Image 1 (cartoon, rainbow, N blue to C red):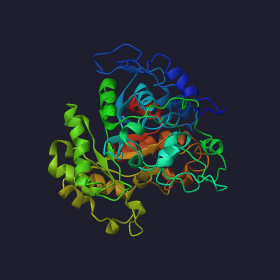
Image 2: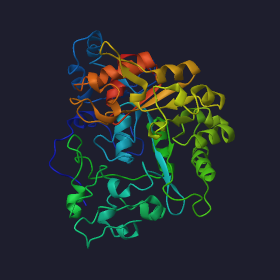
Image 3: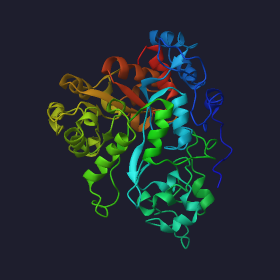
Length: 421
């Protein structure tokens, strides 16, 4: 099934992708290789320029405009969040190649597993109904909760998981833009639900990948890797497969592919996973990333250190070196109406933690404050150009190592302007 509808075309990709072979055996980048940068030239398309032009007059805007002619190079500061899912189906070959083409120095495969316990790239174990074409295939009958076509809303409770399928079955699916209308009466209506600030223009092909395949692709693209071990949606152990087996299997696949530990940033919201890697695979655990999702805990207040369990200092004592909260936990709007580092950010740095954050370019137009990812600064966010102001505070005042982005061209542009590696 084709998931294309007449929405606004993603013109950013038209100029950024023209000289890049998506399906070549060895993907290449346009532009001359410059030894002094030890990087390949990339192209970013018009979006970063649009964002810079949308900024209010400032010293930062003048500096960013001076970078407009490039050349641009890939940067580890620019992390492809699930690839480039603002316009490409997430966790697909096409999405990853697009992100690398836009200069992402690090790419993310969210790792989960199939019925036969093979590792694959999906944001959630049970998101196949919104991120793939499974409902348009006979495999829909194997979903944990299949569509109920006797109902007026057959997709209201639908739930399709990687653990419902074998790897062979999983690989027959095609990726699509992450969306689904639960109130739809027909399958066509269910699929016709992509956010209007995204596009289905590039959803006609979405090649799903195993974790091993992502490693091979990332090696060819010359990027570093940040796999996230996703929380299982099934009860563990799963057919004898324990949480520790799961965490170890992910690392083993990098060892088998002869990937140096310094090129891998394993991450998890489950602190026990991070501590497992630190204790049992220390060469990989050295760069393990604790994704801080404690904002879901009603007893946690990111502005009150007394509610942080464990504390920043206790995390460091346990061997954690990198913490990764959402962007809004790292910043605040100060009394002068400026974006400034939060208490959380200052305490993390003071304890000796490095910081990575998420996720830029995931909120659509920012005219109304930016939504969830901007919740602590919404009062001072009123145009898309403010995204660059936030990025500047995160880089220069908070001091983050990198920023996940759904459209890495934006973070790559900023990183090159500021000479960030």
